[in-house]
Length: 261
Length: 237
Image 1 (cartoon, helix red, strand yellow):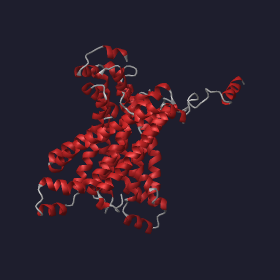
Image 2 (tube, rainbow over the protein chains, first blue to last red):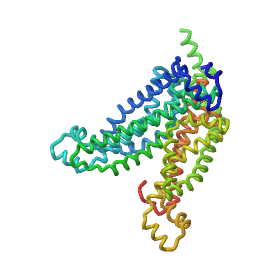
Image 3 (tube, each protein chain N blue to C red):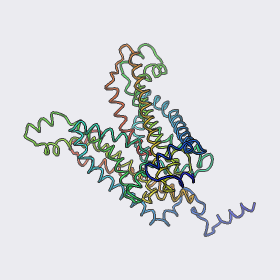
Image 4 (tube, one colour):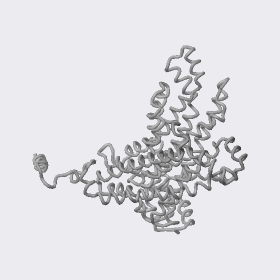
C-alpha cells in the first residue's frame, strides 16, 4: 500500500491516474482483490440472513403469529451500531475474532430485520379470498404456504431482498475498520495515510456497487413481477398497489439500512 | 499446577484481582473508575444528536414543503435522497474530511445528510396524506397559504413526520459511533479505544449505553408526538 501513496497527484486528477493504472487493480490486495472480498462477504452475509429470515418470516406469517417481533425488529436493528457489534465479535474468542465468520454474523444480523419484516408482511397480505379458496380445495397448510401464500408474498419478498442486498453492500465497508479487507480497507488506508485518492476511489466503488445492486435487483424484481402477472389468469395484484406496498416497506427498511452502516 | 496455585492465590483475596485485570466483558469496576470518561463520551454523543436533529428538522421543513408543492423539486429531492442513502457512512465521513476538516462538524454534516433523507420523505408523505377536505374547508374559511400550512397541513402531517423523525434519531445515535474517526464519535470513541487496547468492558459498556440511549430517545419522541397531537390520543400507534 506504500507505493500508490507516494506517487501521483492528490487531487481529482490523482484519482483518475490511480484508477487508470492497471497495477492498482491487478496487484496483490489491489482493487480487484478488494472488490472480490467485498462482494464475497456481502453475498455470504445475505445468504445467511436469507436462510434464517425467509423461512421464519414465512412460517410466522403463515400461522399469523409474531407480528410484533416481525414489525418492530427493524427498530431494534437500527438501534445497535454496526461498528460496535463488529468490535464485540472481533474481541470474542474463536471461532470469532477479526475473521470472515465474525464479519458474516455481524452483517447477517443487520440484514435479517428488513428481510423478516417484508416476508412476514408479504404472507400476511396475501389475498384472504385466495387463501380461503386454497383451503376449500383441500390444500394442506404446507401446500397453502407453498402454492398460494409464497407466490403472493413474492413481490414484497423480492423488494425486501433488494433492500437487504443494498444495505449489506454498503455496510460491508465497516469491516475495513476492524482489520478486515473489502473496499472499506481501501478507504481506511486512504484515511489513515491522508491519501484522498484512495478514499475517493474506495468510496466511489462502494457507492457504484450499491447502486448496481439496487438497479440490477430492481430489474430482476420487475421481470419476475411481470411474469407472475402474466401467469395468473385473474391475478388480483394490480401493479400500482403492489408497488406502493413495496415502497412503503422500503422507507422503513431504508432507515434500517442507515443504521446498519 | 503452578498456574492453578497462582490463580487460587489471586482469588483468595489479592488486592490486584479484579474484573479489570481479568478483562471481563461485564465489569462494574470499569464503570465506577472511568465514570468521568464515560459521561464525557455520553455527553458528546447527546450533543451531536441534538445538533444533528435540530439542523435536519430546520432544513427538512422548507425542503419538504417545496417538494410537496413543486413537481421537479420533489423529483430532485427524492432522487438525491436515494443516492445519499447508498453512500456508506465510512465513505461519507471520509469524503467530507477534505471539504470540512477534522472536526465534529464533519460528523454532524454527514449525519444531517442521512437524517434529511428520512425526514424529508416522512414529511412529504405526511403532507401528501393530508385529506383534501380539510384543505378545502380551510381555504373556504379564507385561510391563506401560510396559515393553511401552519394550522392545517403541518399538524395533520405530524404523525407520519414523527415516524421519520424516530427513524432518523435512532439511526443517528447508532451512526454517530463511526465519528470516532474524527475523535468525535461520542460512545464510538470508547468502542474504538476498547478495540485498540483489547479492553472488553469498555466496548460492551459503550455499546450497551449506545443502545439504551437510542431506545430512550425513541420513547421520548413517542411521548412528544402524543403531546403534540392530543386529538390522536387513543388511536393506536
